[in-house]
Image (tube, rainbow over all chains, first blue to last red; front, side, top):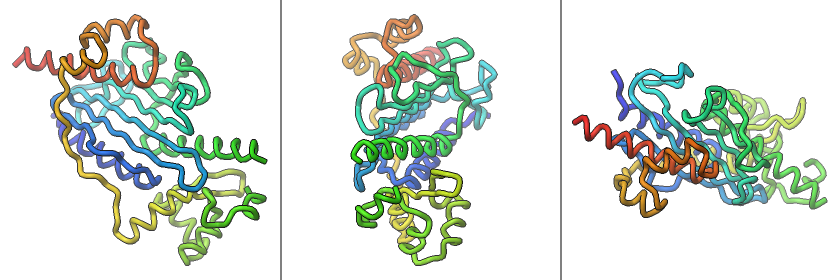
Length: 155
Length: 131
């Protein structure tokens, strides 16, 4: 039986734990609406040691029932209807963003897709759906790359 | 990075080697590797043998050691509404999603978030109608 409330609570806790691990500050309030079956949170990491600033905007929309497209994006008898995980790294231009979207209005092969860092918004790449922890790690790798490039430019 | 280490005081370096983390935590390098392996401390592999730990992640680990957590209290926001959505976008959620599906809206991060809000509002509408 679908239990959207438990699911959303678990998702928020899991996001917050992972964000804490990487030193992010989660901004309140977390939008967590069981009627709309969705969660939205914002987390940021300011520049403390010369590394780039990072701003994360996370939105997930969950519905009861099995995944209608057979993608297996399921938990607690619910499926992830849509999502947007956006990381702004070192700036606020579209090109400074690494984004993972689940958009079921798109063609099957790009329902789960990335808007890769360094490219315009219009660029989409089909993607597997990573765990949130794996995605945060990939953002961390991006931050390190960006930091290394900036250091090289300074040198 | 190694040449930077000569120029920048260790306390200000954004990325630390395992030996530097070990010195800061007063544990052995093996202890640091164990923390990384157990997922207690994020790390980056920067070369075949090179691992770096983000200092912000080390700071967060030390806070957790002291029992200071940054976990926020989950507080429900005021419910979203059609009126607020229309005020922010100029469009009804249904119209927004139709425009999104036909690629008449730019695929920005902000517009994607509006799309998810619109879908949630339409779902609420259907639930209310069914009730």
